[in-house]
Length: 357
Ligand code: PMP
Image 1 (cartoon, helix red, strand yellow):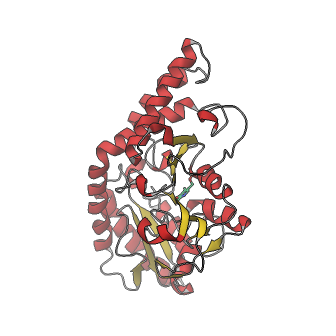
Image 2 (cartoon, helix red, strand yellow; image 1 turned 120 degrees about the vertical axis):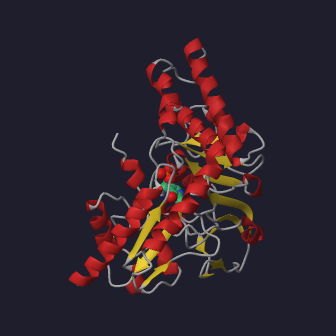
């Protein structure tokens, strides 16, 4: 493969499947195709593989018991499940659309903020949902501040898991998604702390001890388990790489005037949001694509929307900066060489696009 993955700097949208994950999934696609709930040998083999994967995911998040992990179709489903289980709640203004949209339809309260600092609510609520790592800016939110504001605490840990230290014991619920840490798409999980109050959301069969109906996607679950194992073993190596790549890109921008980082003192090293004055973020994305680099102008889930980012708007970023924002997100398969080239390509594109205005 010519390594497109080296120049793919959109790892917050999705990560490439790790070849070791693919290898782990192949037997279940080819030979062990049983329904994990069948009681014959073929089904039992599938169920044994599912339970091994559950253990690996539980270990990665630091769950006390693998039974606290319920597989879902991804973080979107896990987020919807938690929010729909409470009549009212609080969310931060920075949440991903898969929290924001259900919260709005259910009449949840969006907390006021000052920069990344959240203001306490007027009244405590049954649930509060605050993401661990913001997918647009990489800002990290700690649970301690918001914990007293509600009976139950949920976090969308999608951009945190396998990337930064994460201690699930501080939460009642945590959502996660395999394709953000080199596993397959369409599989994720919800962590449910022992006695946290939650009803099933998908009704039907008795799978997942009656908590989530639907035939288990065994190959994808195996892939998520293998990806979790690899993430746990390699988290420091992956972090080290992100910490090296970030300054390589930034130092190439030294001679470019009028740009800023939309960050926070505690930020994930994997996400870098930069705004350039006098350039459209979308034009930069397209221009860099022509040079062989994949970056994004915001969250992939809303990249076709013409609305400005709700996250950057909540941070009070003025329109002139908002429009020129791009997100670079680093991953396991990027190289130092590609990061340096990306910095130079960004410099060239920003200069050219400013000149054509
Ligand atoms: N939450 C966050 C913070 C995300 O970045 C994403 C993926 N863009 C999701 C939720 C949705 O995850 P999934 O693709 O598994 O539904």
